[in-house]
Image (cartoon, rainbow, N blue to C red):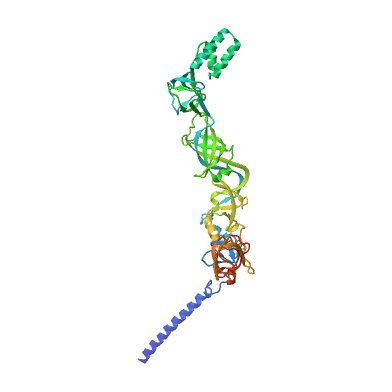
Length: 492
């Protein structure tokens, strides 16, 4: 029995020793494998150094210490030093460019011929008008079959008018002609002219020797009959308007130009017009007049374009799609319009640099036409700009506190740290003051109404609501704090 128990005990001890030995051996093998580092403390300190702190909503303003943003109810974000020497760019692995959908374009220099597309309506040329009046009293004997709106040819007959006065004057003229008295005949001919008789009718009476008391009323020009104020049997008096004809040899195109584009329109500027009534036909003309009055409802300026109409196809009332061609003749820089990011207060582009780096640049833009936009300032010829994916890069630049262009505001030094502005007191107490202040330029902070704590209750002395002051603030861990209030020389 003792021998049996001794064997079992020996077997159990051997098993325990085998398991312990295997664990030790495995631990030694694992710790000796290449690439396996000794355990590190998860609470090891971060050795990175903060260069400055900023508000992601106002990345142009930098602060030299952490704290609360004076612009938003949030903590300032630190910007750490990195291995790159350029902290004003966004870096992306060049191999990932296609994954981000980035596309590029080159800044180009050339003559920028811009166009402006607007709408217009055809109207009569009010300078091409014929007014037909009676030069002598008479009776309407016949009216030809015409009505307002008819298109007439030149010399088209409108009516026949009996002029009794002409009958007596012509009879006298023919009698003197038979007598052969030259002086009296000249006087009689002048009398016929004064009665309103056309020269052609006088010649006809002289040649035929017969009295012609009827006046054939005709249209002196080709065009549209606008008015016809006679009927058969009517009595007409001298000076009465009988008809009015508007010519169609040329028409006016009335164009509505937005007031924002009015400064680029000049007399003589070339115009291309296309009418839906005549697809595929392009009509060319020039700006003949810029009317002085702006439409107060649509905020547009009326521009008049004169168009030749030799075939009479252009009828007043037709609409037209108008393209105003504008050319400065000067060489300018331009980029595709899609490359420009408009924020409402400024325009930005993302410039592509070497090694997958992208820099936001503020630019001054000019005219825009045909998906191109002129760059007045901010870029150089040959630079590459991002035309697709630039909004993603701009958002990343804002989060990193990168400011576009050279408009960065330097952070205040630790020694001074004071920022000045003009303002007016809205409310004041021993602890704080509410100010309607102008911009703090050294902070990049726009004008607004804001409440600030007072560094010293004594600052309140001698001040009241409505006073105009010059205020100096400093940046503290809790935000901006008023250090001085100067009542003299303050502006609202």
